[in-house]
Image 1 (cartoon, rainbow, N blue to C red):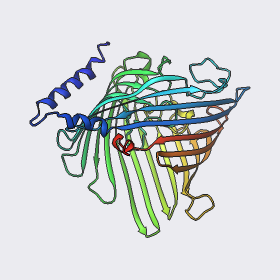
Image 2: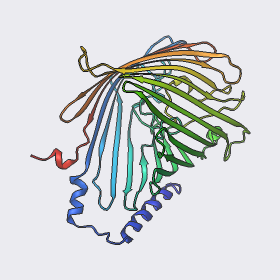
Image 3: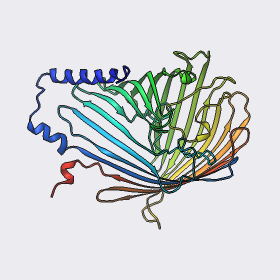
Image 4: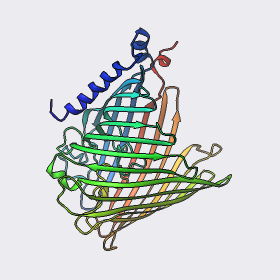
Length: 423
């Protein structure tokens, strides 16, 4: 066992030892039965077809992939429980795409490589210490809008973290969270040289919900990686996020989101920079139609740029911020077809983006995308059918790219085992 992994193992043993030392902590036969009778099985199966038509490639990518996620989360005894799930990702038919590990570099990239991997394995303590939750082990982690920490859930292999997370609501209207990130398991899978990144990183997050008009979330993220090749991503980021809405009349609601963050070099990053991130997104919802106007800036000085390597991002062209930074002006529309329509309950979205260099103002390119998604509820879970199309028109950054996705997803309902076996 690596010396680094001993940190989380020792934390788990300490957490377990403390629990047994607590007053009135005793486990009986009924408690043990609750562990499996209240357990929630996990089954999430997703088929996806993805087509990529990218300038510079003679061949289009055509990827047919299947992701099966399976496992369970136990019931809780004195607030303690365990969760585990694995993922099996496999391509169907011939590989006519570059998965990043299959060597098919004559095709555009679809970053869904074959893999069989442990996705989550965690110990959780919820309420053992009053109003406090502790989660230890490999786990899914999403901060708010996923702009700084996300699971990249759109890809078949989601991003998870070997981490310790502690959150408490001991103070009214305030959640306080600390996270220690030991290892990031990225979407590229266990067979990739960049599929796993070791670190000694720290995250701090407060969320105040005591105001009617907005939720305020200050945060800090200190990234420190082990690999020298990741030194450019080592940074100290301090920011704040505001989310709110205000009902103007029974049919019309004003929405507003804003964020700002400062980032500088940290740990072994020898670059010397101080850069900012800004985001504003006002919007309106009228009955079941929502419209938003967004403006987002990630600064760059020509060499260094504001980076968010743990984020969930919507555009594959900007996974790493260019040295000149990014300005993104966008418009988003979303609605759901009404119950009395020909095809009720279809969630429709459309978005348009203009991308510019933050430093020089030069035009990177533009993108538009649209999607339709329909959920079918069944006795055992939900089936989701989705269709999405995106078109990136390059100007001075990257290449023209068109993508089409067709997704069919089944997710088992969250009923505990005792209900599934009840006659």
